[in-house]
Image 1 (cartoon, rainbow, N blue to C red):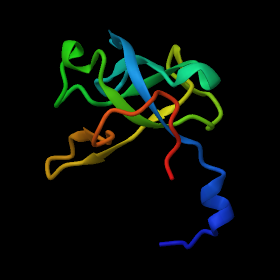
Image 2: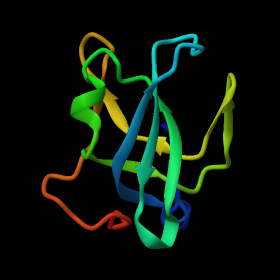
Image 3: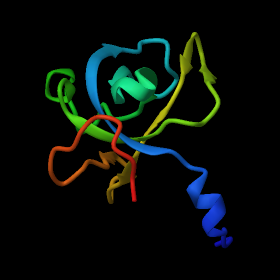
Image 4: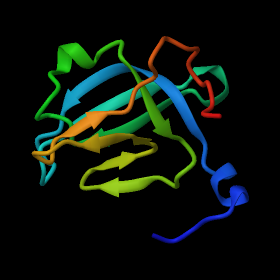
Length: 112
């Protein structure tokens, strides 16, 4: 594992947002949803493609807070442009479990 400096880590904008829209993404090579996540008034709503269909249904994702990286450059994923990375961890079966705040916090709150 490569070490990074504190300054490197401080450049990563890890924020909390609330999922406000979930759509199927049938053109994705790996099953995924297209999400819109509200990161608060400073950052606004950002789009993300998320490979979380194995463990999460569309309905249960709406209104859920997630942890995302909001300062990556946009990434073209097929016909979709992803503007942030919704974070998670792979379980023993390789399915992504979302990283979420343990209690509700304001959208846009930064990881400390």
